[in-house]
Image (cartoon, helix red, strand yellow):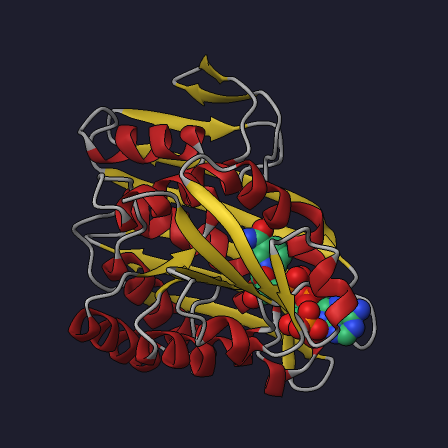
Length: 313
Ligand SMILES: NC(=O)c1ccc[n+]([C@@H]2O[C@H](COP(=O)([O-])OP(=O)(O)OC[C@H]3O[C@@H](n4cnc5c(N)ncnc54)[C@H](OP(=O)(O)O)[C@@H]3O)[C@@H](O)[C@H]2O)c1
């Protein structure tokens, strides 16, 4: 199969800052079309063709795969439309709003013979792949504790992140990254127990901060914090019965085009600069071509969505 012809829905902050360029640069992929509510913003992505209606991309027979980069409440209807149209889908995080929606969407994609992948770009970062390898291949023994934070201070008034009806909230927006990191490091754990949860609400019915303690096994614990109302922090530390991992650069989830390290039992392992968004587009394109690119497993998206459900309950 030749290069995968991608169509993009939405031309907001992320497409302009990062994923548009990543798709242009990705090997085995073409940025064939973009659609935005504003035609000028769609054209500005540099896609081969631009539209002012998402359906024009979804229904285009010259598109193989669609990358959905819309506010969170719009993910599910456009995932459904893409699957219906026989397109492969890479959709920004959070894939959908509940675990039930995620399970149903993956079932529909499988029945239609298309890929559905949640675009948690951190999972494609070589450093994160290494962390997951160390946590799951026995190098650290049993994982017994974990700390993951993704916090920053301030979301602009009017942004969908501050409105529940548009899929806003800190847990969906940033708390989801440390949850993905945690579940990736615990492949045999199906569900985590909520030991404690503390949510600070604001905006229009959204959590500005969610702090959670989650448990598994006999007394193992994780602390996960996502916030729009705390000083910027992106931490990951993980302890096992035979070793520990630390990320010290405070960019555990959003390290972009920079050389990075991970500290394993006090020794640094180094990684050259990389654009993990580009790796994501290259891997998903290879998977679509049947050439074995890595994709985030549906089970991981579903386990994270279940944890989000429990923390919001
Ligand atoms: N993986 C990551 O690193 C990462 C980072 C940030 C966000 N995300 C995810 O990516 C998705 C989009 O996030 P975002 O930060 O790009 O959101 P955003 O800029 O607020 O865009 C969200 C929506 O608003 C519309 N929009 C954007 N700029 C506009 C403007 N000037 N006028 C009118 N409408 C405008 C866009 O649709 P139109 O272009 O069609 O108008 C888009 O659907 C979310 O699901 C989010 O969780 C992921």
